[in-house]
Image (tube, rainbow, N blue to C red; front, side, top):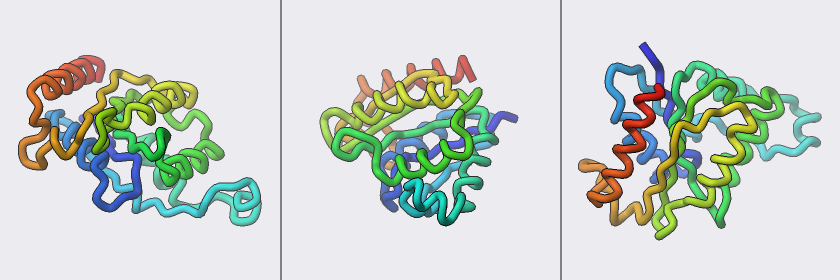
Amino acid sequence: MKKIIAFGASYSKNSINKQFSHYAAQQFDNTIIELLDLNDYPLPLFTVDVEATIDYPEPIYQFLKKIEEADLLIISMAEHNGNFSVAFKNLFDWISRIKYKMFENKNILLLSTSPGKRGGVNSLEIAKFQFPIHGATIVTTFSLPLFDSNFNQHKGITNPHLEQQFQEAITLTKEKF
């Protein structure tokens, strides 16, 4: 049975991107789904000086192992000031020091959401460019704007037009998964 690893690229305990990635994972039947919380992977701020002093913290290996177990990654990118969240970028930087091609041979359904009108599209576009450099195959992308208005924890995406676009992304991912 194929395995999906899903997470929001945020360390916020109430991350809307974590909620959204988990919702997306639930769209897949007959799979093993593991939902990650980045709070389970605490790390010091990456610098080459810290790297030289402490070597590589154990959470990096644990997270990398999860990525390697996946047949499909569902990642919903949080956005802070038009870029990745600092905490996710820190995790990304640490992992790339151990395995530059961290997403090697991994298919990714790349998502984003935010409370704003642009739906975190800047961080999604950065990831869409950056992740393939690290070995990923981006199957497709979807950005959900105005999360609080367009998403309900029990109903999912409430805007019919956005729900249709989301389901098209899910269908395409299922075809390639």
